[in-house]
Length: 315
Image (cartoon, rainbow, N blue to C red; front, side):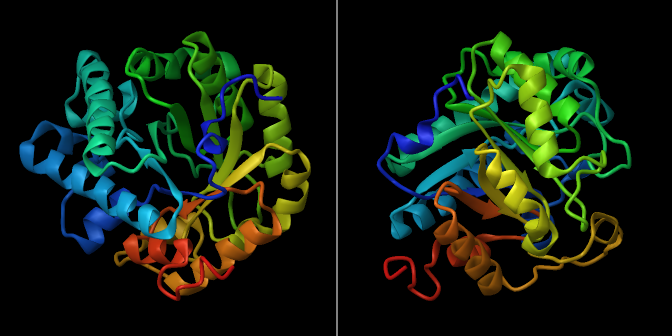
């Protein structure tokens, strides 16, 4: 079981919101170019920092209106050594910008003044999270991810959150790296349309293997970057582990390969996605962190919070 603090239950709220669809929203909906699909270069300019701060504000206001907590992610999914290097960033830049990202989100928490705001340092996979056989073993993954996670140490974030992780081995390495620095950590696995990770593992199997390889240190697990239809068959077994706490879903029913090849954004049906995730939360209250991933925007987040139809209080 988890040995790290779980802040989600310290605010007296039963629902937190999370959005990790920043990149697709900025590119397709807001017309903001992100070279290499990386949002972290926005930290380098006053205009970019304002965009990121206002984004945090939009999420906070949705959470406040819904009486929910909010999980604010740093724009650092691509901010590890190998993924930042092709964009011209040296290792020292990686450390500096990861720390600046946490500072920006902490400042946004103060600016928007919602008590139930969690500051999360976001980590992404080392390589393509959707490639067959993707991922690494725990030792290699720990060595690789320790650099970025080490940059978070001392920044007073609330938790490290690893999203779109394709294998239990890479997830375990991330957890080990966080444990090395004494930081709370959560791991979110991605699944294909068959409900299995790109590594071929089941969601439940990946959770159990990650716990076995890392001493159960992770605070909790999530699934992200997939439509609810894709992971629905895998949920019963994953829930039975007692370790799954979050669902951060795609709006589109397309596969990862189809999404990668698409020239336009598939935003799906925001209201349908909201209804599906709220129903999941009602049926399984332990799933208390809900949100949107690729193709989602603030319309989806309002729907997930129940604000569009005014259903949250009634439900």
